[in-house]
Image 1 (cartoon, rainbow, N blue to C red):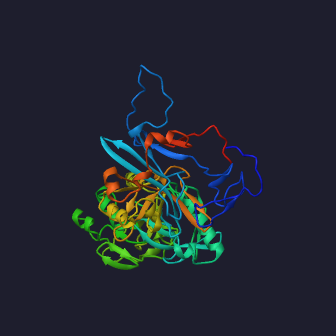
Image 2: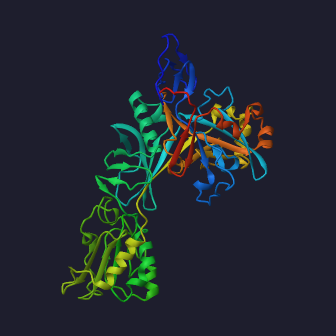
Image 3: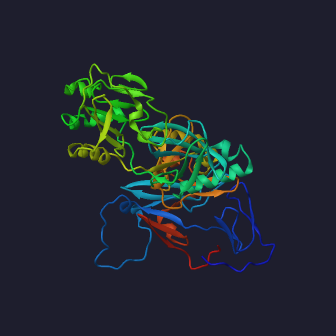
Length: 490
């Protein structure tokens, strides 16, 4: 993209792509960095992205026809999908969406309505695969010192955070809103963000990457809780050790008391656990949450044991203690005073510890963008906006975000979530109101679109996009851009 020579000073144009309504000088960009004044014309700076479905889904490619050379066309009918990335916005949506594109798919006339929605009421849900304690539920999560969200829950070996939302974007200070918007934008575009949790950990989050907790990179997601781990590996311990304790902040398991141990005929060992007994072989709260063994605050697992029952325990009893990721383990034998004495891990137990590690999934951060495709955005699709909502609920209209599949929440409105790693790179933008800009596409049969009250007089064929439009063709992680010969301001 090249700069153009700024014409006269009073040649500003007013951008109507967002509520900021910037006056943009010739050759300059608006506050969003997305639109510019190009020789008196308001232009979208990023290329409009189309996806090659076949390549994206790992399908086979059909070679070019041997009898003719490539004709240079970028768009080839049904193999392509028009995304909203780079399409532009219609805000306020008193006018039709920027692109309403028809195509034929498997003999059916379809239409895809694309627009870059402005989401003031959006957020991200973050799943961080780690046993380590990040902070108490409901505590604030901060970026650059500003509150941008809070800790929600710990679920299935992961810590959940909720960031953004209307109160952080618009209900706090100006800086809070700006930092929240920047944080959401970076996360949505796959960048690393450092977050600090009140009374908790510092964590670096990046979609699709391992979390970094207090400067230590996480590697493994736990295989399950302590009880589940015993269920999975009890047979592999049978005959090789007398007792196993799987240390876990949530549920610590004890083999001899566990149902799996009972089924294997493992006798009582006289072990006594601290914490709150839930059901046989399952203990809650053996220690405080932390970044040590199994997401607890302990570095010495023996601290969760009470003295062995002298009426049952015998000197020489073999005890394995292991965490739910297999990263921490220790092997002990009882001495004459029934005290555990640490020994080298026997080779025949090492494999079972390694098996726990092998069964752990890689620890990752998952970022889901969540927004509501309601409000006036729907007026850019149809003259009767509620019809679009009803059509989505009936699964007549398929919703995508940058071509990626979304989950649409039940209930009112079109509230959707999308895994940002499935959206093409840098698909998200922002406006300084502050709000995020996200691509959204609605695809449905052309006949249904007409019945919906769609803007039929703005429907254009897919082939028309190749004429006079700046396009990017997304193939896997590679984006190929074509554009007019004319220069584009930056």
